[in-house]
Amino acid sequence: MIFENAPKFIGLIYAIVIIITLAFIVRKQRFSTKLGIIILLISTGFGFLFFGPMMPYTFQLLILGDVTALGAPLFMAIIGLVLIILLTFGFGRFFCGYVCPIGAVQELLSRLPVNQKRFTQKKAILLIHGFFFILFIVLGLILSVNMLSFFGIYEFFNLSLFPGFIIVFIILLVISIFFYRPFCRFVCPYGLLLSLASLKSVFKLKRNEKCVDCGLCEKQCPTDKAIRHAFKQECYLCMRCSEICPKEAIYYSKKRG
Image 1 (tube, one colour):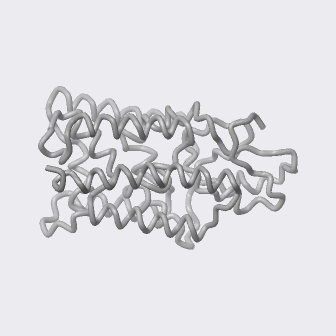
Image 2 (cartoon, helix red, strand yellow):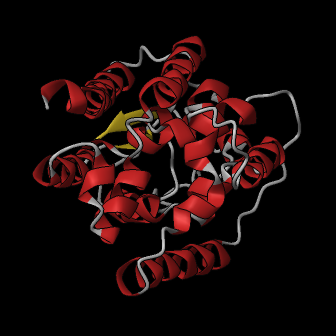
């Protein structure tokens, strides 16, 4: 039983370690694009090796009550899901940004040298995401339908020979080259919960007194969350704002800016 649950346990430990480590590194202003890409590659590899830490899929199976498919004791799955939410409340969306393999592979593709189109209609994003979340709950609890199975995530990361719905996820990945994180922003049910947690996260990216309002960070932010005093529920801590800032005015703190 211990070895059977090892992949899920390893994935959870990896998630906890990376979230806390990244929070420390960003707080100390030692983050670099190269480091971020390395972590994204490792997280994507975890998806192929262990299909973890795939919390959205774990959340789906929990809603379905499919204990067998969880590959871990029920209490461990619940603790893992709650723990990631608490860490997001404390440090922001490092899990979505760098740890979740689904988000990691989209983030890597968004780094390709292609001009991305920005979708900044906040109400539309929330409505679409909310619709998918309600659909996810209704289909799972009432009809026992695994909605995420229609997106081919399992087939993609398990290199399944049977196509299934893998084409759907591949299409989403292609879209993510031109539009930032379509699955995370519009579909992921667990991501919606984490976005709510990040609204009140203790640590956030802020501006300090060095800011001259040049607007470069706002132009660079793929989710339009670099605007001063903006809610940070869609901030994936990609650090593009910090990278582009000429005055080093972006800082990560629990203090008000």
